[in-house]
Length: 247
Image (cartoon, rainbow, N blue to C red; front, side):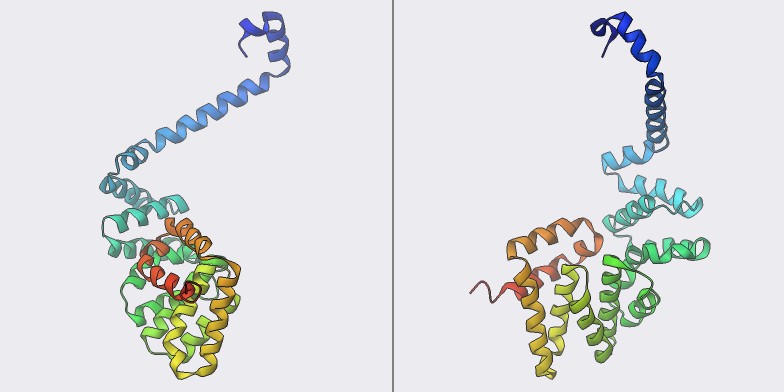
């Protein structure tokens, strides 16, 4: 509080004992201003939604200076998608492969978007295959699901089915579990036992979360590019999940 309220004597004693707080405040203030100053062009471009300017700033950082931070890569990939320049994600992937290949598993999901959108089973399997065991957690679920999708496009049914069932049983992300069960329906006519298992997978999900909770979960994840790209498919998955419950 200002010295005029505390009194000069008390203020003098307080700051004499707690002078480090003033130094800490100045240091934090200086760091924040430095951070804002260094990112002024980027923040201004984002505020104006000038995606060409965002791309220009970040390409200089990432492609020329090789600053492969999570924030830089995520914003740049988002800008590419917004400007319908998904093919340029391939340039970003190649730069990381050339200069920091150890980072590839960390960014495997976002860098794989152009491969996934190609609908070319061979490209999808070749890209995601090396990451099937190296990417863990929720991102790992998405990588394996994408890999299974590529296997389906290649008509490698047995391998695709095995991967999708593994995700239904052991997946950490309920959205990926539901997508996996939905894709498995393509093989249900060929195997009565599989049809029964698919019903069990679906019941397991609908027994845990209501339709309203499911829709909230999908909406919450919509900030992720993969979920955004699959928005139309997820509408079909929602109807498939809860069609019996709505009768």
